Length: 227
Figure 1 (cartoon, helix red, strand yellow):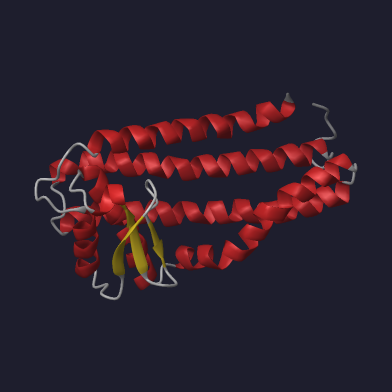
Figure 2: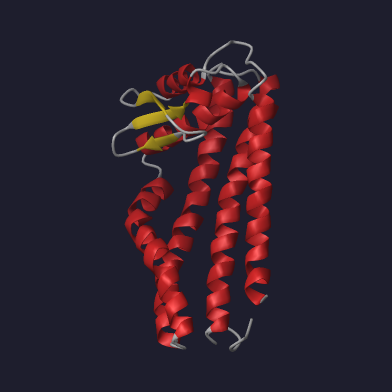
């Protein structure tokens, strides 16, 4: 019961964020931009306007699987975004282009996030299991070791927040500045990107509450408790 109480806030926030993303994207994927640029064309215009000319815009599979890879300098857009001229598609495309602009401008939090990927992967794959085993064996030391590893996931997610917020901020500003969308179309674009940003906040809350639960159960935070 205690575990459910701890994970409930993150779970509810995650469900809300997921609903908001799907709802906003579904609504504004039906609204065509006035200039008719597709997601791919919007990303290319934003990159060109920002002076970024060494990033390839490509199509990828998977629903809203859009991402920018700083290692290969490839901006991958999903089917729903690449060829669509909707406000939703353009918003997502410009957000990903915002990451490419961050990379080109040596945006420090993005560099830090990339550096944290290996430790975050270790913490995600091993940290939780070590904490579980530590509780089972009543080993406070093992729980603490697992918590240290798992905290790398939390650190990665916290660093991710400014990276994602900044990419959206750049997208909203530059999309209007470069004539990708009109000022009147910004409201729809904002709703799509703001909903997506909430998913990252939900991830931080979920990880933090999970970490606090294990520390509490191990007696490392306020004494030992039972479910």
